[in-house]
Length: 351
Ligand code: BYC
Image 1: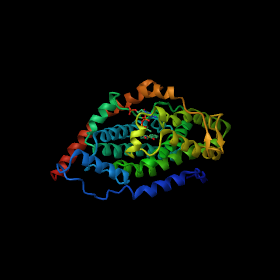
Image 2: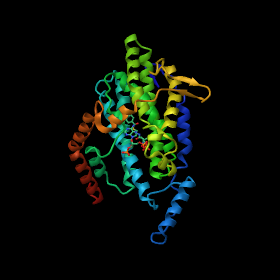
Image 3: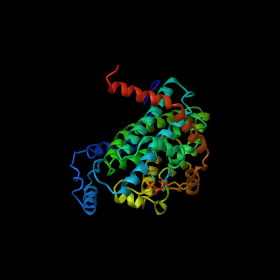
Image 4: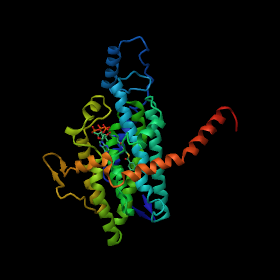
């Protein structure tokens, strides 16, 4: 990335993650496999067929029969994912009017718009499961559905926008690359596109921090403070430890998920350490050390009690984030009505 002749280095490990995404893109294609005919098969036959499709690493498509519990779990995870993208526009949106240069502002604006787009791909994917979008918004606004915990933390300095993108977009990519191979076709396909865009988000955060850490002492301190604030929330994004994870075992059997929360958290730490070295910043964990026997970095797990509290609604910004979202939805009602009226006119051939 280049600004005023300055070029930040490539974050180590980023290209490899993107190559994994590319490698999955063709696997996710809808190959038009005919579904089992309705009414011609027993529930056992339908289940056996579903399990065979999953075991063969083929995709379940919206037209296919699927167990109710599989559908429910997908609706749960996909809607949480969609909400996270949309509510997740707020912590960085906070810096849109105050970005330090026109270039940074343009980049941030594009990133925040992308998050809205990711929300749209994901809401569309949930709709393929027979749920309407308005009911998802209601569930979010009434606190019946979740979004990711890190969004409930504040971004008090410009460096927080950079640290948030470097760490939480970095964590999101590590989490989402295996989701590109999810057994549900619309989810897997959405993830391919999301990961590619997320890769840009991650790089712009890395780039913003790289500039700050090579700036004045005060700028470097600001970057370090922001990394200190975001390291814990980024680690917590991967969810509770495996033994406390309620959904992982089943989701992994259904191949919605491919790895445990802990395996992904470890991969993220292993990727972050060399990136922090290039940035010249320190990850705030004295226990962080290479373990040659395990072939991984040892690290201190995030504070899971804090994660529980934040998910339960008691984070620093929960009320503000949901309040803003609710207000934006109400104030945007006229835009949705206008779009529906416009679409109806187009259908009737009125220009
Ligand atoms: N925060 O059994 P578990 C982005 C919940 S946006 C809140 O392990 P699972 C970005 C979990 O839902 C990208 N809740 O669940 C945007 C479950 O509760 P329910 C967002 C959490 O599903 C803007 C319970 O705890 N990415 O990157 O197997 C700017 C037990 O957990 C959290 C996604 O949403 C958490 N951190 O695994 C910048 C990824 N962790 O549902 C960046 C998609 C756990 O029973 N989601 N919970 O009420 C997933 O991959 C998985 O759902 C999770 C959890 C890894 C999050």
